[in-house]
Image (cartoon, rainbow, N blue to C red; front, side, top):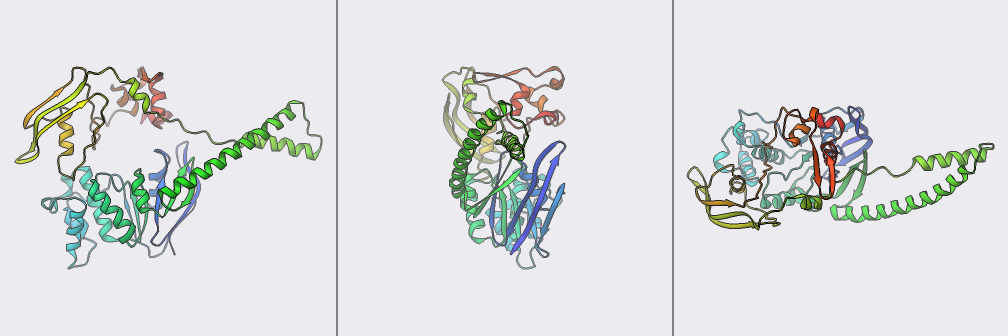
Amino acid sequence: MPVISARNVSKSYGSKTLFEDISLTVRRGEKVGLLGRNGAGKSSFLRVIAGLEAADHGVIEPRRDASIRYLSQEPVLDDEKTAREIVSESLPDGREYEADAMLDRVGIRYEDWDRKVGGFSGGERRRVALAEILVRQPDLAILDEPTNHLDIETITWLEEHLANSFPGAVLLVSHDRYVLDAIADRIVELAGGELTEYEGNYGDYLEEKSIRDEHGVRVEQNRQNLLRRERAWLARGAKARSTKQKARIQRAEKLIAGGPKRSEGELDFSELKNAAPRLGKTILDFRDVSLSIGERTLVKDLTLTLRAGERIGIIGPNGAGKTTLLKAAADLSKPSGGEIVRGINTSLVMFDQMRSQLEDDWSIYDNVAEREGAERTGGGMVILGERELSLRQYLELFLFEGSAQRK
């Protein structure tokens, strides 16, 4: 039985069409993963399905009695309510313990359950919103990147819970292939404004997509071969004197217009390695470093050396001190003990959860150029491997095109 159906839905922003005449039905208990490149329109499609944005045209038909909940990337919560109040407000009396259990399960510490969420971080607010949806158990949970701000243990639990325990249908966006593989029983891909469906989980999607792509290559090769013959015929001066010749000319024109859609530009991150300046042998050296917040010790006597070219992943439960460690490494906070020695040519940049390094009043172009007004005077060139790109060309690799760079 369908929980919701979207039929022939289209959505544009200005001159940019995100999707056109796409349709999707989500049935009771289904777990559907939505794939697509950044900027393809996934979040916009979720918001249209959730009834938070209007489609330009098309029909959204939820089942009459269906309950639908949406987890956005930046959820709106009542700042004057506590985490416990938000999660438990949909529960009948006597079942408040379920809210407490869910808050604990998503990594909200006991001492924060009765704090007002206005003082929570972005990640904590996301976890409270997720807990509220899981406790409510709607007929359809629409989840936009639900594993953001979760630690590995909680992600593993969430995979199991959504796949095997959550009774409602799920429509989720995730860039985590393992999450999609564990949860989804159907994949839909939004690309080039069109929606393509694949039965099964992420692994099944990869296999089926490979087969379809191989078929597409053969179809395009056949099209090119036929097109060469038709172009040669047209070049000999073919005139539309008969119905048969008119049809052949029309077929040639259709072949010319029917080529594959242009693929969007991609950034090859291996080029960034070649673009980096020469560094010394040691980048960072932690010497018996301790980190504390108030009376609470997060890290004690850490000794670690980061050398040029190394990639280090930091894991741990929420609240263990991962972000605090990164801030200390980036010289945004001081250790409570020990010292952090930086190499002579070490240049540090930190991308934090709240994106605090960005100037909200500046455009995208000015932020990347690191000066206000750069859009008018020019942002210079970007060296990327062996390529030299203007800043506008560089931003296009991240799907910021045209007027989007001025936002």
